[in-house]
Image 1 (cartoon, rainbow, N blue to C red):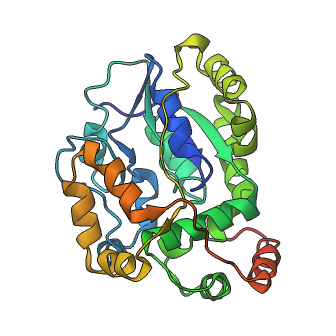
Image 2 (tube, rainbow, N blue to C red):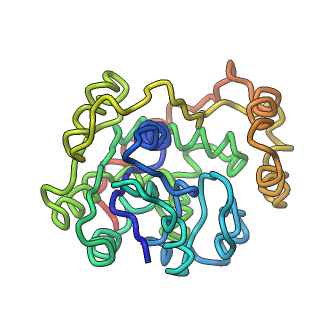
Length: 289
């Protein structure tokens, strides 16, 4: 059974998709066909919620044949099969659920001895705003930011549905991984990566003992927060599952063309100043489990 030995551990909306593409451009690094298989945090994803929210981009119980973003793998053999054909020195899992999951560091350390961890974080406030805009773009919410914050603060939402505050409490996650992996972990920030991608990749190359010239900085990933042109239709398609089915069926070459038709890069959702203040206040609270 082949297991990953490199983990890109980041909160959502911290640039992990772009960094994963840059890392995978190196001849010594291979990324799972499912960028985020979420195996070591699968217990936080209630199966009924996953089904109702259409979270799985592919069926995790079947063989994966093409690159995709997200699925919740629960079966160890199916998870390991993602890495079986890899011959590169580094085999990477880039799930964004691990940083906020208290059990993930120990589970990874036990199952993947000798693995290394790259930790990627972002300013908590800008991360949360970016995630809120993503939720609007995908149709997962049409509610005001303040209402979304209130829903999360009640503690009534499933863990997988807490996308604003819990993933933004990154310091606690970093501390847990540092405790588990010590000098086998490397921490960088979204801000430093954007400011100097080459420097960030040079540091990673030293951490992994690979050639610093092997990365292709032209490898671009697209995971934007543009507004949909047809917001109500976008949300309806997501709720009924048709959006997920279309995404699965579309060939890779067609997706950029459809994206240009469906999203408006010039539009940006208005967020009320009171909601901005509420978010800043909520982010001052201590980490939750």
